Length: 425
Ligand code: SF4
Ligand code: SF4
Image (cartoon, rainbow, N blue to C red; front, side, top):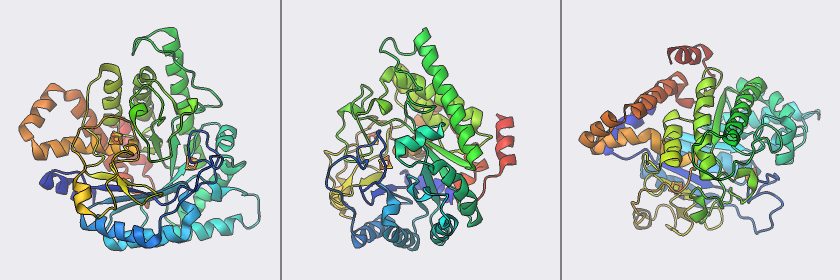
């Protein structure tokens, strides 16, 4: 399947499309890092089932390969969610994803917990869902549970995972990087200065981050996860670029927990790259090294990697209006109802690097070299000669993705293949 999409890309020069559909902005969690948490007072909306079905049909016609159903909390609209996953499968969408904040794993001590989880796992496993994520915010269980407002949920997830595995669903642990990564305030603020310096505060920042990430990967592997993904910090008031954006997607906040300066991001993407490398034999970690390297260079040296495909091949549908945007963060660019071709093709062609939304930046960086090869083979070869380091990382990522069965969440991890890949690298 992945090979088919790579060939499509080489033939047509565009990335396989992706549609992120925010089914609802309702949520029952208390995450301080998110503007949709239950304590925020604003009118909540969910998209009507038939409207979303029409969008999916239009997406399939347009050759979109991936659909993510996000929220708010998608499992609050479980019945619609299941109907839509089935609809997308029938329409021919190959990569269907959704996830949860974990509220369904509360109250694990109650006698009906196993039955409840069996029913949920069976329901989801009967659909063509490919990937199911569960958010985990910290390597410290108490911190995670406090942030989400779900006491005891970590134990519930640990009990639920073997049940999911029995139904052939292998959820991934989804970390949104924040300063509580290894316990409250464990990642210190690194005051502004010269980017990339080696002074004591920078060393402490890097050490804490590295230790937090290592503990996180160990922690989720110990819980029973076989896959992990890392979401880069998204704040709407930092000095790293995102501050200029007008987020239509409420999964952003001004909270200091997710606000990292450009100087911090230069370190963050470097340390994250190191940690991903170190843990690739332990877990299937989606985060590509080539994207981390490009982001590190962006913040360290002002270099530009492959531009984001938001608004070209990737789009975001907002739960309030049901309208399409180039992504969740370019809220000024309302492209109307998805399927309205003139509106979509009106999306501008600017090269955007304004934020680090990993849903769009990671696949843009991964697909960039193939897209380049299809469109400008000579320019592409010149670039590769000039920057062999990037292409080496990219090839390493592809080999690793192959060892991970291209993150097929319906297949168990194959630890021996992961170890073999790590030994070879
Ligand atoms: S991060 Fe997710 S779970 Fe937390 S408040 Fe936001 S939408 Fe809800
Ligand atoms: S980089 Fe991508 S996700 Fe971020 S604002 Fe630009 S188009 Fe949107």
